[in-house]
Amino acid sequence: MSREMLKGLIDLVPDEDIEAIYKVIIKFIPEVTPEPDEIEAIMEAKADKSPTISHEDFFWN
Image 1 (tube, one colour):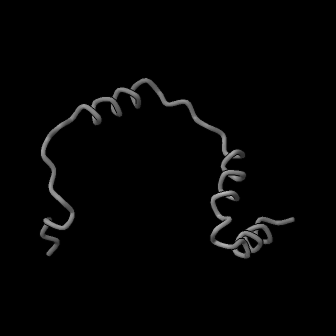
Image 2 (image 1 turned 45 degrees about the horizontal axis):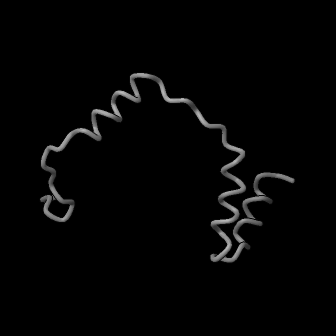
């Protein structure tokens, strides 16, 4: 079976079953252990309580 055939089969899956297919497929994707500097950056971002600008409030022009 080719990747294209598999993609075509996935398109036939009803919307209510997509989550089940996702859970099966995701098991085949290897997890990557984050590097120490990546963990540090994540922790720093989580600790940051700086004010932010809402997407709706940003002037895009």
